Length: 115
Image (cartoon, rainbow, N blue to C red; front, side, top):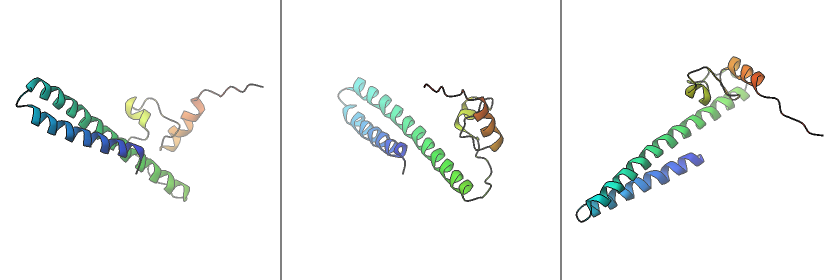
């Protein structure tokens, strides 16, 4: 279980508590219920994004494990997180597509060494 899944559980719990509180306060203070429901929706959205991040992390770990065992697993879809957000024009050094992973390492800025 990754840290993001823990955070997703916390966001889901917070969303449920806020929804219950909003239903309880809707009778006397509807304006307070509206803000509680808005916050609950935001926390539910955050929980969904965190669960997606957890699934991607687990998939990357499984891909790396299979690669370390000598298998040649197919690249994940999308091949890396940076490619997903850059519409395939830029790739991360952890790219699961071997060609793009090597090219991304070549384009990375060299580290500066101080002596």
